[in-house]
Length: 142
Image (cartoon, rainbow, N blue to C red; front, side):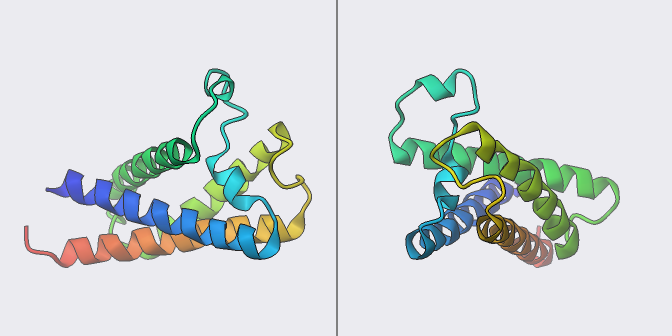
């Protein structure tokens, strides 16, 4: 049950992040959603001509993996049901991943501060959603 719940949290949170960055991209023309689903920097995947839905599914798979990994890491310190660790961890992940924008011409400039802000904000909100869902999971009867 817990594994299924963690996968669900990864999918819902990943969909939120995707929707948030998609709306930001539409409103601002900053290619932050494109950056989210971009695989131009992955050797084998960059050769494939993928449908946008396939790229989104890859993002959701990564989101599920991130939730599982962070849950396992935070469980070691008995912090798996706190929101702040997920917010901080995903903020760091967002900062680190923003650098991949340098590997593509389809994504924002590396020093586009507004794009950086929107990207990191989206990842911080993602962390909030993951943390809140996990708190609700903790309160559910086993």
